[in-house]
Amino acid sequence: MNILLWIILGAAAGWLADILMASAHGMLEDIILGIIGAFVGGFIFNLFGAPGVTGFNFYSLIVAVVGAAILIFLGRLIHR
Image (cartoon, rainbow, N blue to C red):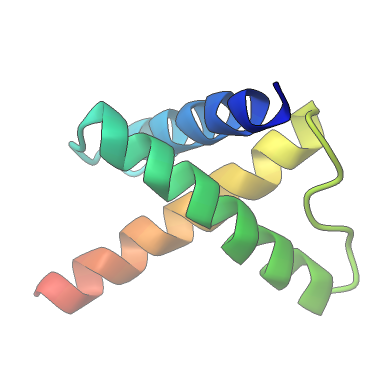
């Protein structure tokens, strides 16, 4: 059940990052971006002294959205 919650969190984070960054990805890409974004966001937040992903909560969703938005931004830089 725990992995299902993380997939849901990843999907929500990827979808929100897609909206914020005006990007057009499919649902599977949103899930992948959200899950990887949670790792990236957690790493970046830890660099600044803030906790990363702390569980299945709103704060963790924000961390994952920030990480996914950074991934979308970096992807755009690479594709140019």
